[in-house]
Length: 446
Length: 175
Image (cartoon, rainbow over all chains, first blue to last red; front, side, top):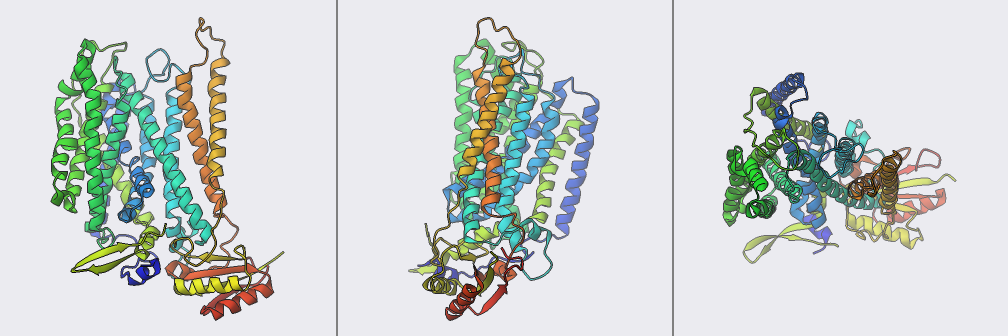
């Protein structure tokens, strides 16, 4: 079957003009108002915490945990799009834009990061990956973070240009988005450059993300805890972020399908694919955690036992147990069953669990590392678990609200689905009857 | 030299493919016409030749520049201060690798963005001859050539079934 025939037999059409935006009913504005209030309270809580000064790092543990959660969700989400675009496959088409829109949350994350970098001591005179290099880690980590955020924004802009140009349709006044498309006409050359550019920017984003996540994990956890030499920890941080980002994208797609009026475009095949991906990253979560854990557990040197106590068996045990259960045990047991994994609701529920699990995991890691007051080559005494006060809680809730609020704003600004990719896919597929079963036939021109 | 432009609007890929064939039969080269669409079609759908670009050169140039700057900064900041190292090496290689990677990536990303803008001619002076119905699924066939050749193109496209045209005379702001 030729692509043209498939196109003729396709019944769905991508909308044109401004009709791509999800419906913004009363619930949308109510949710926006609620999130904006919580976010404003979060900013107030941050200002109050600021008044206490920067001297006591313990007070900023929840702030750091919130940033790490933002980093692991919003800043990592574009990688889901990048990965799926590289691999190909038709089910990824509704996923790409949703994942890339989280790049806009990168601006919030970067602003959140700036006060945090102040809390890290200079690299000189202490053990770190920087060997006391000038400007480290502050200058280099900030430049790396800024590069990552800028790359995400470039990726989002470039992937959205054809849809921005689409807003010129209808023959009416040129919209703001239409103007942002500049001289895009959709010529053969432009499409080729678009696809090559998306590939390049995507790969660079992926490389930068792994790099910045590793730097962040090294500087904000490993180097703050005396005696911590866990070389696998940065990889664990990256891997758990990939799991969380997949969960965030899955949950967002579910919400858009359920309440955004996009059920015709976000189909069961997308959730089936994401369910598989979630199972894979869930298994990898355990592998990376176990690989780091077994070294210290088997080694059993006094400083290693104290490290295990700090992060796993000691005062942070409830957070660890919740994380292990919500990031691995329950998702694994649920996703193991085909009816759950292949459904729409199953992966979405698992995504909620994973997001909660990662939040507890980040609280465990960052409140522990930020509680360390001693320096040297080994821990000599364990700090108590940091119980959150109301300022911590509002900082945490403010960060989460900021994430959701920025995303809600982004879907009012840009098309929430990549219509040019969806339309491209629709041209290449058709429903056919094979015996007594209806099947989707997909043409592969490459 | 100013050139005329004509934009033929096709309702489906078949008509567009026939129009491209008609243009090539009349001796129009690939540089003289372009196909404008709202969504990408597989290459060769309209019988057109492959478009070439040099985007892949940009990240390489950026990466080399970024790496060079990173090496200069890291080596310079370590050599310049008169530090007594007690026989140890002056340059600390492991953190240099971190910054060299960072510089390489920064350069590559920056130059990719520049390359994407340049190679797609995104910031051209004007949109040129265009019809907004292209964003709604029509396929545009844009021919840019001398006035006589453009008239020939219009005739060829009409023969292939294209019914609607827009024309931009030379010097009227076309690309």
